[in-house]
Image (cartoon, rainbow, N blue to C red; front, side, top):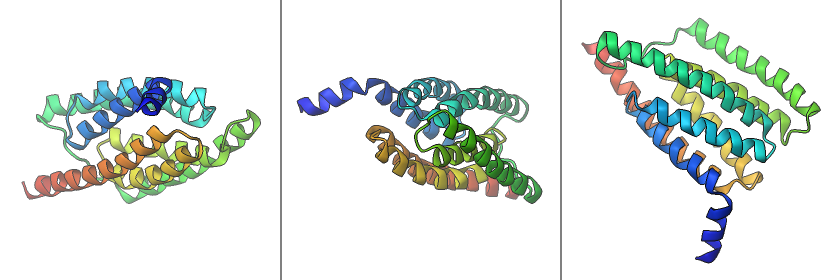
Length: 197
């Protein structure tokens, strides 16, 4: 028991990020507007965690997450105000292809930069960061495809965090895979209901 207490004492910031991230994602699966301030707190907590472990692409990602979180909060709030609910929006094929290509280009550019600053796992971390930005943009724009991409990215993140000895974060991301599956199912139901209305 003392080993667990000692671990949690040494990783309290990671634990706080774990709890707020899980809560924020669960609220997002339910399409509740309160997901955004909770997620904003998680963004800042993990910014510090990743910087301390030299996962610089992930730390940089948190800064982008802050911007996307603020945008998503505004975009969802506007939708709720105008339509009374958060409505899922379709993602057109050209936009999907362009976003995935942007993720690939971002992976290459950021990976190259991170090799020069001594980042841990520079290319893998850069690719995960780049595609996380794509998924975040889709989430803010209310596209169901965000959940498919999060499932893939989060599975790979689990392995990265185990390798970097961020065990709580690895467990969190395994849970995020489950939450992404839940989000996918919930948002698909919302799409079907909207199409039938």
